[in-house]
Amino acid sequence: MVGYAFMGAAHSQAWRTVNRVYDLPARARMALICGRDSGKVAEAADRLGWEAYTTDWRDLVNRDDIDVVDVCTPGDSHAEIALAALAAGKHVLCEKPLANTVQEAREMAAAAATAQASGVRSMCGFNYRRVPAVTMMRQLVADGRLGVIRHVRAVYLQDWIVDPQFPLVWRLQKDRAGSGALGDIGAHIVDLTQYVTGQRITGVSAVTETFVKERPLSAESSGLAASANGGDGQVVDGAGPATGPVTVDDAALFVARLDGGALATYEASRFATGRKNALRVEINGSLGSVVFDLERLNELEFYDATRPTAEQGFSRILVTEGEHPYMSAWWPPGHIIGYEHSFTHQMRDFIEAIATGADPAPSFADALQVQLVLDAVARSAELGSSWTEVEPALTAVAV
Ligand SMILES: NC(=O)c1ccc[n+]([C@@H]2O[C@H](COP(=O)([O-])OP(=O)(O)OC[C@H]3O[C@@H](n4cnc5c(N)ncnc54)[C@H](O)[C@@H]3O)[C@@H](O)[C@H]2O)c1
Image (cartoon, rainbow, N blue to C red):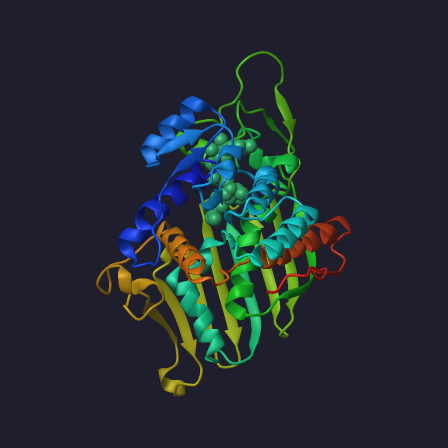
């Protein structure tokens, strides 16, 4: 694994847990973790349960006994690490968004397709697909329970940079993060809604805004984890104004058309005061509607318009039965699960795919398509919200 902070910790927990919960054809051994600061990565290796640590990610790629490389770094290093790992024949799990640019994402998808021919697997970490209620949402749509999908309404809202004194961490720098709310949280709702509906976004009209354009410089660009644990993201003490420009969007809103005929709205913002990590998706179809809210992730609201009129209404399904996706290995019905379980489910599916020679999803090609949507949103916003088609992937990838 490369990176040991927020996602490093979430993924480590999942790697530690997955074989203790699920009966899988292969076992994960947590061999080597990489970070840039030897003291901090040594401490992280011990705390998170890794056998050894290194300060150079190339050590992961060069070791013969390592089969899987898990990329949990900011977007500016995804392409370099993933491409080297794939070239060395390692299976790669890469955090989202896949890359900082469409060009990088295309290279990664092409490399993944080449590696796939020799049995090397790759997957992008859109973990919310693996919340059981979200997986079930997709099944309801696929089973025709919603009929023809007319509307998709998706929001992903946070508020961690409302304070203009919050420092200029890596997530607020375009060269490190690629984009702001758009790529960080907007990417999740793009992937989630396309996954649930089975439809792809074909065109968008967007607005983006950077509300706070200058921020205090940070000692180390470490993002959310730093702000949460008081770690790296400290404001630099000392002389001078010590501020720098915010080069990403604070909020991105767009309307979209999907290739199955649905109309969609998306809102991704880090300025939704009071909203900490509020991801909500509602889908309206000709036969029913379904709603998912991450703050109540064990539940799904379902409106079945085929029921007698007198009995119609949104019903709350508690998605904790053994027959619900991923749930049979956990606890008795009604014993709820949480955020981190989505990562355990991600590792389960990845290990199973590797061990059985199947292609895991979302593939790098799927993640490239999300990147193309993000790119269309950014271009539309630059052009005064003009209607912008999503470019075709045009890659020789078997999806
Ligand atoms: N799936 C999700 O829900 C989710 C949530 C948060 C972040 N992410 C994604 O995960 C990735 C990491 O985000 P995070 O929140 O964990 O960031 P973070 O700042 O908490 O951690 C980044 C880690 O990468 C390390 N790092 C940076 N550059 C490195 C390099 N060149 N070599 C080795 N280590 C390096 C840092 O030291 C740190 O340990 C990003 O792509 C982000 O978009 C996904």
